[in-house]
Amino acid sequence: MPNHQHNADDWLARSRAALDRVRLGAEAGEVGRVEQVGDGIAQVSGLPGARLNELLRFDDAGFGFVLTLDAERIGVVLLDEASTIAAGSRVYGTGEVLQVPVGPELLGRVVDPLGRPLDRDEPIEARQWLPIERPAPAIIDRDHVREPVETGVLIVDALFAIGRGQRELIIGDRATGKTSLAIDAIVNQKHTELICVYVAVGQRASAVQQVIEAVREHGAAERCVFVVASASASPGMQWAAPFAGFSIAEYFRDRGQHALIVLDDLSKHAATHRELSLLTHEAPGREAYPGDIFYLHARLLERAAKLSAELGGGSLTALPIAQTEAGNLSAYIPTNLISITDGQIVLDSHLAAANQLPAVDVGLSVSRVGGKAQARILRDVAGRVRLEYSQFLELELFTRFGGLSDNRVKAQLQRGERSRALFAQPRFAALRRIDQVALLAALSDGVFDAQPVAMFKSLRARLPSWLDARATALAQEVERSGQLNDDQRAALIAEVAALCRELASTAT
Image 1 (cartoon, rainbow, N blue to C red):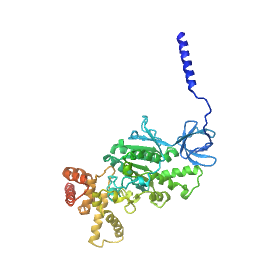
Image 2 (cartoon, one colour):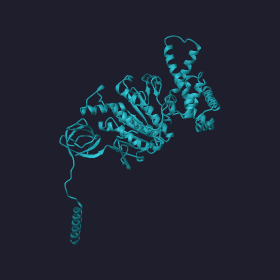
Image 3 (cartoon, rainbow, N blue to C red):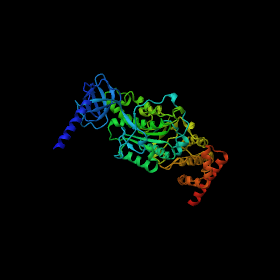
Image 4 (cartoon, one colour):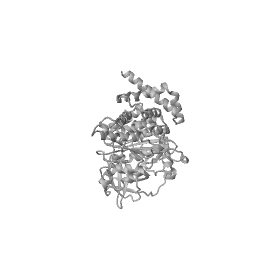
């Protein structure tokens, strides 16, 4: 009994001490009220001090962010399910904008746009948070785009080179291989120091899972971050996903590292923005998109940049993806994105249907950085390949209406057919720079003119091991110097010709 009395006295003393430390007094704060809720949008009154993109907390611990500010109400986009939010629910301002955790702790993880893990229950112990909306680097803080981002895809690296800090749009109809091309670029970075961020906006959960498994199987998933807002996620999460992905990638760029971000895709992001804007009664414009749709994607993609040496020299390269309808590049969102980015890789549905993959339309695709960011040895051998290939495509179309006129035209068509077969490349079959140089040099020298088209699949698969076994020193010297003299070029062409003879003898 005395022990019980002693415990009670201790508890009473501790309670009085705790109460003495409490500062009593009036505390001012803004409390809002939900006036209307539905379709992922809440109309809130009573928060005159709320800011754009400010994070708000509801009574049920749910969150939303401010999208529009009106005289009487603010439009709040809900980030989670709104099953318990109703008219009359209280809303509290947090004074903070929407933020996402950043840092090396996210590498290898699958997260939602708020940084919450989706792959396993293990939480992410990030030491730093960044706002999802951040200003783009100023012009004075940027450097020239000179270094290449090698995708391992021959037709891209040879004809439409992508540089570190560039924004290259991948655009085409549905099922033309847009995501496949971007994932090939991510997988090829297992040979480089680039850190990759893949952002899924409005994609099917099964498609996102396939992407993640492909990177884990073929690439370096431990240097990738997957930000997922699938089709089943709330519109608010889909809207925030690209901005969150950029903040995650910018953390590495700002520390002098190099990052690559894939946005899959911005057409669905634009549709989400239109949906939210119409629900918050914004004035619709062309194709019912709000007037700020161009600014939305411009301020997002401008964050990709190559920083100056004074700021560490890091880079962030963006590969946004957009979908067209019936190949219509003049639609509103495609024209917006084409004007914002530094070039586009256009994928053609007819080429995809003919199994010419990757289905890159050489005539409509362009890189506005191009040769400035291309490795010198690749630029030297690529030379006139794009022009000759474009001429072949036009000539092939023309000759369908009549017979072949002379031997020169026949030779040009034969060379073009071999070029097309060479540019066809299966997924996850990346070519090293030395392999690409050897193939393009042999193509320009006419090594393939007399070879059967069916041979190129085996040639592409055998070439890396062939060069490793027979021309190791040559390949290392070319890679080290970054230049290709006449003797080295002749030696590479000779090795490719020897492999062609080997394949021809085994075929017979």
